[in-house]
Amino acid sequence: MSTINCKGKLLDLSATPVVMGIINITDDSFFADSRTKQLDAILDKAAQHLAEGAQILDIGAQSTRPGAEMVGEDTETDRLIPAITALLDRFPEVIISVDTFYAKVAEQCMKAGAAIINDISAGDMDPDMIAVAAATKAPYIAMHMQGTPASMQHQPHYNDVTREVLDYFIQKKAACLQAGIKDLIIDPGFGFGKTLTHNYTLLKNMNAFHILDCPLLIGISRKSMIYRLLGNTPAEALNGTTVLNTLSLQAGAHILRVHDVKAAMEAVTIHQYMKGL
Image (cartoon, rainbow, N blue to C red):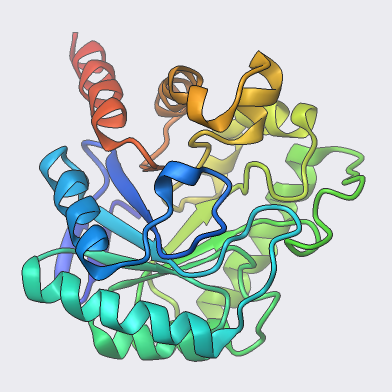
């Protein structure tokens, strides 16, 4: 579980956690400052993320905030392929993760040079996705979500959120392995079909997910579990994000998916130093 194969580039997750920088190619992301649609702006954001220490760039063309309008696979493809091409032209060694739940979009993006598939539905929104991930030999990020982006925050309910999400991933891992996926990454899905209490319960119990023997990706950057608890806004949620990223690192997170790479890298550096004492 410690090394993932990203189109021939081996990324070791065993020693030092990795930071994944978010690039939203949309005008509908919940965090306004992350919205980037023009190629020059995409390249500038990528350059900033990479200079600050990101080892993966995660690009998405569909907002997945609660109630977001679905743009469709054609629009996603039209937005993502030119961005991937431009990024690889400027930064040939960059590892690109594509954030999509459409199998056809993922397949086209892998052909264009992306290396990782990041699926918020873990194959539940497109039944072809797991087969495509296996066929492309891409590392596959499977996220837990109760419902869909349109419905997920309409009274989400669990009897035991940690047990139910863990049980979901036990079954999902079996399906992915059977399909032939070699590198599976688990994302508990903070903010996706979960209340504030559900989110913090999952974070508190995150050690339980190591039983899956898969790398853990944590994506809590500037989310409502921070700004609703603190009574501020996504724009004011960087400090809270750093606190939760640090707690995630202490619980064994392997990848932090963030808007603010510099702050996340500082958390990783301090955490690693403390581990070494």
